[in-house]
Length: 426
Image 1 (cartoon, rainbow, N blue to C red):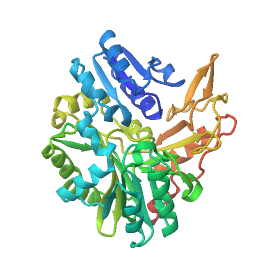
Image 2: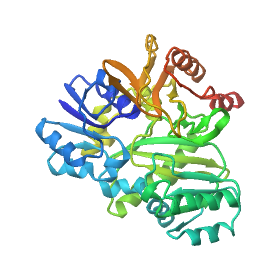
Image 3: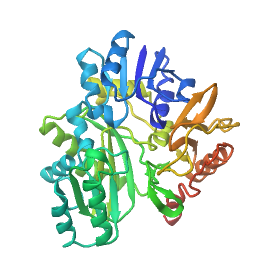
Image 4: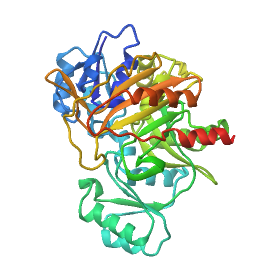
């Protein structure tokens, strides 16, 4: 079986490693892949957003199944185009990917169908947004409507910061056209939980919960990033919370999308806040999260390709989705200066970071240059360890991460600390 995976980051590397466990898989093509993925798949230098080229490659290379992993090609209709030439895919079609591609759409969907979320208003005019903000309370949250690499959300502590945020997004176009419309919403308080879920448009089978660490610095300081590390499972996601989420959020979301004629098949990511009033949706993503995937899939005991086929074929109710009882921790190694300006092309020395059986190094922003592995992005590597308990997973992930070297490398030192504190308080 020939598999095509669209994308080239840590999420895609994790997916490819898991797909390789299926004995029926012969060749995996990664478009475009990266320096580390090249060890596990055949990398083809086609951009993840070059939809015409992706479709042409798929038609010419006897692809049996495609996995479209990033948000941009999903929103651009990559799955629709591959379906049109008869290639089954894992991932939603464009009309369903709108649940992430437009925050205005997703917020209006939640309001219409009574799915719990923060109070909000939407704006297409900066002056109107600023006038609304000046009547509100703080902190307040401002979100660019469209895709912004996980960075289009501003938490503003006071009126001036909020006004500046509106101007930066809508007038200065910090996130390009993604900021033509914005959502201004109330600030929710409580533990955050990420839950990725497999769905065939009828059945929802959640994966193990996780906790992301978005800020660049220790103790959640510094700028927002695409994610500096993750742990799984999330101790705040108790069985009681999970049941409420299934009944009040997960199943109603799938039903809402069906009612809107936007049946969602693939991985639906629920970004949740566990408030004093119960779980509420912060955001939806139309695909696997990054770096949540790097802790969730290593704990998956069932065969990933079988599950992906079931999501496409509508047979998820007959398909096992089982996870181990252990824990996982992923520590991101980033380039100096990230998430702002950083340099590329720094040679990476992995040493024996993957020598332990429970450790994997997933490549996010790497490339091969003259045979050497070099940095090629802000988030460079994700070092993941699995173990019987969270404390051991954290310890092993950091032990492996500290073996790796490249100029300017930095990491947070407290990935999982909040989760451990929650475990110890129970």
